[in-house]
Image 1 (cartoon, rainbow, N blue to C red):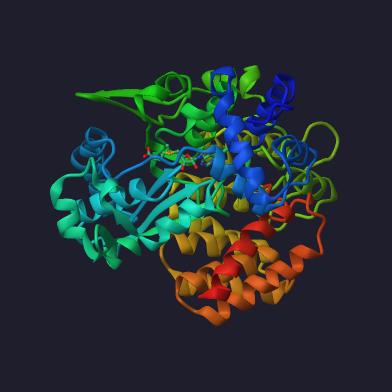
Image 2 (tube, rainbow, N blue to C red; image 1 turned 45 degrees about the vertical axis):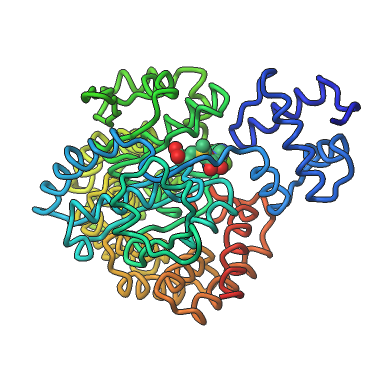
Length: 511
Ligand SMILES: C[S@@+](CC[C@H](N)C(=O)[O-])C[C@H]1O[C@@H](n2cnc3c(N)ncnc32)[C@H](O)[C@@H]1O
């Protein structure tokens, strides 16, 4: 152990780690923190632990350095069917209900394992889904697995596991869904592997819910054995944000050790024999306002310009709306409103923006629809309605309002981009790609359109196209200051997106 690391220095480093990764290293875990730091300094060749710590805290920390530190500080323990009882309830109660209701409308289901480590939890959900939904390939299915540790995600992507990963699993799991590849190693069958998408996401700092990283409108989120390692403040913030990622009626599955934070999250505890699961039910305005005003949640719902922490849901278009109202630049039919005094349209719109930001989507939608059908019609209202419905998982309604936005203004590449994200959620990849191409035709420097088209091409196995668009995105991002928020990105900085794209482009280069 390094004798020069003082308690004070280590304690400041622990505060820095909590801010960057959410992880809490109280006095009882200081030894773990020190060991993780020493392993990081060895791997990065940054001198001794003291020098490494000072170097990291002085910043800026490169992605590679951050990844190594995250790998040495996180606990990646996991296995298939880890919480059998919750999965049983998911299989026998929650999913059948969801499937029945969706069969009549949009055949779409969205599940997310947040903090998925090496992927066993996300794949357990995919297996379970394939069992209760035999025609799943006719549905738009999203099973997302995210983690802060890219090395764990690489393992997940390969889908090859040893015996230890099956220690809690029913015996049929390995027999039916895995093929032996070597002594004691098993590869998940491709049909299930292809159901799951993995992506890095730092729950402490990255934006969510977001159309950009596909973390919106989730039916089920499993976030187990993750926030138990977080500082209480960070744990509360993460759960408050995960709540916003759920559709109304969506479910969050945590572990009993995280029960305290879950009960404070604004979700409704639902008791099943042997397990408590948490459900998003539309909260009353008063309750929500109480949450927003609470000091602990100040970071969970911060000002939009705080790009690193803010719940990134909509670009701030109220300024546009205000100026357009006063300048009389309506996009549709109807009379101009006088500029003197508070503009009722702007007031209602701003209130709806705030409702959406706080996850009160039903209220936002109702107010916006009244505006949309009123005498003064504005493209910003259609745009926000599109986002509000997309965030609730009402994709047909989202497409309808996206059509209205495009009918009002076909020249705005953002409208085409937004439409593409919805089409992607509906599983309509070709139409999504066409919308992205239109966005790029209107604005060849539209970073997000290149990024999304690159990701889409990757998923479709179009290697050359994926490389081209990811490289275009990288070139454009290199020209922006790292702290600048990427336009239309809902708060992602150029530096962060560059890291994400670079990691994807590197994978393509070796593919
Ligand atoms: C103990 S594992 C839990 C895996 C799985 N959820 C389960 O219950 O079996 C905790 C995971 O949380 C991840 N994690 C820790 N901090 C995180 C953060 N800030 N953002 C995203 N993931 C994080 C770790 O990398 C690790 O893979």
